[in-house]
Length: 318
Length: 215
Image (cartoon, rainbow over the protein chains, first blue to last red):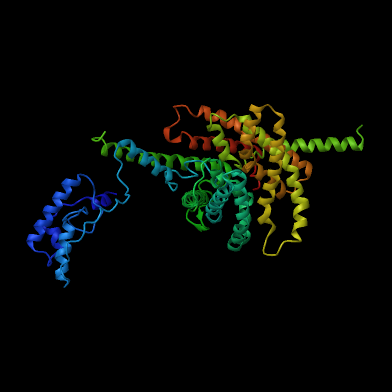
């Protein structure tokens, strides 16, 4: 953001900058003229940032600007006839650009939006929001189970959200719960076939926790929202949620296998099993609770740091 | 002396009750299998939702869909198996079929609620989709099918699962209220303390039963 905004600012013409762009083509008189034009243009437009970022001297308004001076200097050098004075063109419409928030409240709102959209860490669906707990607590007892759940989530979560949103657009956003659940149940059919091809009978280790993914809140939570998102948004958020879910499932699965058996993916890491209870649902609840506590502590510290940063940056403007 | 019919009735009733009690305590949907845990945490956190307004529909849908689920497992799937292509395993269709069972019951409950006063009807109808499309309901149907329960056992287990869910909500609600104390370290407040609390209760039930339940 910082670089982008600087890029659009009218820059002060220094000899070093001008040399880098148009070294042999411009006479010192032309350069001085261009510099004067740029300064004049900057003072006239007072805060109106220039849309044209190609010229070193900035400014695209009418009149004899630095750009036109440079163009005039370039043409004879390229063997062209010097063009007659070009008719004045209307100023180009300003490009919509992402501006820095102008107030602390705006910056904080932007920060919260960013935190809300950060499904991988700060707003993880499992660890921060408590969604998808059943498969994580009971079924993700090993890295292999976690991997199967991750692939299942990958095949189900985003496609369900996209399909359900597309259908909701057609039905006028009615029957949302039925639409979401049936979208998931229909997509479960090809997903199961793919999973069976990939993992074979190992899939039985997930038991009922594979089919219940179709009603798992992490997949169909959106059915409760009244506002209908676009298909693109559904796709983006679905992918974000999938990444967050997979991270949590995989972390918990590996940790539980390590604690319960001293292995990860069957490879021995520890000589003894430090906590055999970790493979039971009770151990899953407690372990996930401890992981969530530390995760929350780190995430809250980071959010606090970002909030302080916003306060520092906007302290003068308030 | 009981005659044969009376004996059968008593045995059936005993079987029904024993499976219901089993589902409430030893195989509680929350403490043993974590089914519907996310919905439970949301429910206890939401000050606007009353426990009965959510758990009432859960129990009704659970009980109503139990016989339909049994019929799907014992009658519909064996019939369907003959028509399915070899590349399409019947397991792939289970969620779709069991969801349809729940949806039929949801529609029936929705109609039955028409007999209630307007305010009550609206509240319960608003909770009905969330209660129907719940891991607890679908999970119980799948467990009954996996364990080949009879119709009576399925009914008892379905009722017990619904009641067990209510039981878990009441316990977690009370625990959550106490866990809001300032004595709880800041990083454990909220979701972490609730998970650890449920974990300890789950551990108690695990200790009582002595073995893990099948998934």
